[in-house]
Image 1: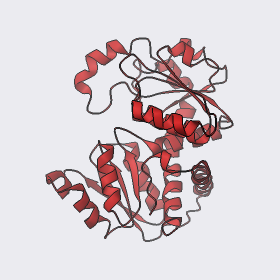
Image 2: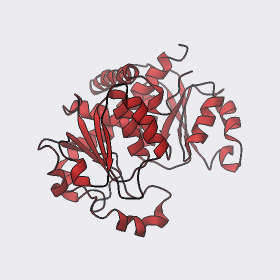
Image 3: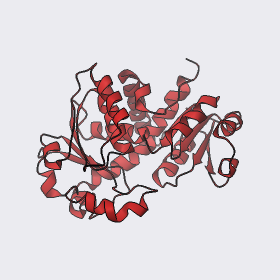
Amino acid sequence: MRHFLTLKDFSKAELLEMISLAQKIKKQTKERHFVPYLEHQTLAMIFEKSSTRTRVSFETGIYQLGGIGLFLSGNDIQLGRGEPMKDTARVVSRMVDMVMIRTYEQHKLEEFAMHSQVPVINGLTDMYHPVQLMTDYLTMIEFGKGDNPVVGYIGDGNNIAHSWLMLAAKLGFELHIATPIGYECDEEVINTAKNIAKQSATKLSFGHEPEEALKGCDVVTTDTWISMGQEEEKKKRLKDFSGYMIDESLMSHAKKDAIFLHCLPAYRGLEVSEETLEKNADTIFTEAENRLHMQKGIMVWLDQHRNK
């Protein structure tokens, strides 16, 4: 059984297969040709963390593939009343064909997958957000930045940064990460990415100077400074992240034709300026749309490899 929990579980060839499949399905969708790849299949969508893009993209995606999505809030099922994750997995996976989970702890997702009889997809955890990074790379390809890009990530060393590390290590492109002191990426994730990167001589660099990290970059990206569950840290984080906002001054350190990506929601005047976001609106909102198509590619790929 193949699950989609983190990018480190897949080879470069497998990740590119998923992206190629997403490109094919996106083209079919734009032509209003909806191929029922997952006809009559049911996707259970378990949300312990709320979402706009994740819910809309998965629910619309499974419908366009010929199936149906079931929205399951953590407050609406027994999971929210103390039922062990493994028991929920044993029950739900006997009734549906695939499960997407958006939760907090990575180990809860992995426990569910361990006891599931169907493929499980990581819709986001505090450690990784792999569907977003596959989406970002699809978007980079569409905007001509998929061939040996240099990427600069500026901001919190969070689940998005961790997933950038895994994607860069697997696909073999250069990645520079700049975080404030005290907000570095998880050391275990860094070591895992470095070990993977050795196989392709991928360059991964880490520092605290945004200007330095963006030198020669084809792609600039960031994430919110205050993720869900960190609201009490807002005052401290705003102070600690001073100087890390992506604006036109900071963008000038990247290549002139560099693109800016943001997984949204974006907080203008914090991690990105209004001007920079609007200048890159086409890229950013294409990226948002691509969540729909990339996740369809992932779901179809998992279904095709269900018994392999």
